[in-house]
Amino acid sequence: MNYSSELIKGTLKTIILKLLKDNSRMYGYEITQKVKDLTAGKIQLTEGALYPTLHALEADGILTTETEYIGKRVRKYYSLSSEGNKVSDEKVNEFADFINTMKFLLDIKTGIA
Amino acid sequence: MNYSSELIKGTLKTIILKLLKDNSRMYGYEITQKVKDLTAGKIQLTEGALYPTLHALEADGILTTETEYIGKRVRKYYSLSSEGNKVSDEKVNEFADFINTMKFLLDIKTGIA
DNA sequence: CATCAATACATAAGTTTCTGATGTATTATT
DNA sequence: AATAATACATCAGAAACTTATGTATTGATG
Image (tube, rainbow over all chains, first blue to last red; front, top):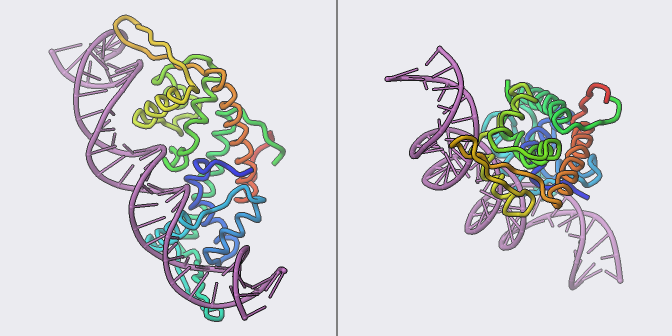
């Protein structure tokens, strides 16, 4: 089972920024695999959504990039800028707050923290 | 403070269906007010998003409607169809599952259930 | 060694869905 | 009398995702 795409909308940036917070340096394909692994396949980021988002975050100064060659294959590593570090925390905190609001609104019980 | 609109995207249907599950009969404006009240203003549904969604849910057979007049002012009440009842549960369950996945992914600690 | 799968990037047409504005009309408040 | 609140609806434009396509390298498999 995997989530309807509309659920993932709005959380893509948050997921990317959190992963980069934890791993400091990741490339696009690696992000898709990491998310797939960590969520047991429930969240599968598509390239058509991921790459444009990474480009936009870079254009906004939230991410910085370094291109490397592994053999002849190119890899573009993304890292958080200092502003990106701040934005990452803000996004995660906002989502944490959102979860609490939605749990109340939808009357959802979850396991212990 | 209120949430960035992108966060609310993808949860609008779920919120509507859950409210109608609990209240059995609501009209559009009432839904906006109820959500605002229950979330202390953190989630404010806009009419431009709400009404088209209600119309779509009705067209899909998930909601049924009854129009009433309060004085000369019209009110359109929405209720869950039998299928809507099922979809409501599914949506809430899916979101509950999604919350758990995201809590793990974002390393979020929340209060006790 | 030939073929397919996986790795790794990117773009783009079409669709969906929201934003923000506009419009109409009734009722309550000041 | 004028403004705010109630209550519906629609629409142009924007934003963001889906799905497909494209290019190229590397690993696995029979």
